[in-house]
Image (tube, rainbow, N blue to C red):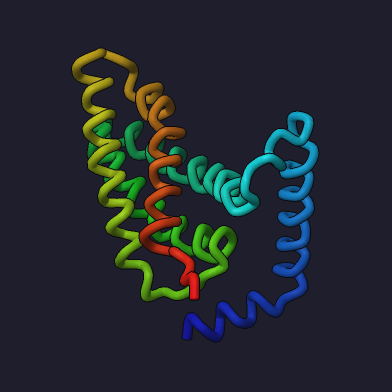
Length: 163
């Protein structure tokens, strides 16, 4: 059922226009942003940053909503990770690594569980031991956790066969 829905979405004119707009935005960022500094990096890594930015904003919004409602940073982080993993798997797999194999979700999930516990430890350290604001603490951790996540995904989940 979901396969048929997905195929009809992919064939729609709106989807094709959306992909075109995203491609144009990505090309601009890759070649022109900040004097073309991003063009010095591997294209896949820059796509990861681009998609990762969307994923991070999405996950942080979920975290902020949860921490506002629940007032518990660790529980809010867990909720944002679970929802974020599902969203991230689709966007990262398809856009960055050109891989839509849903069988990789287990490896993907294991990578995010690993980053979750590292993130949780660092978040608790900042909030409890250093008394840094719970919103600012997660904002500080976003980039280092994202970089670690890219390395895990590239080398463990979506590794290319070099045959």
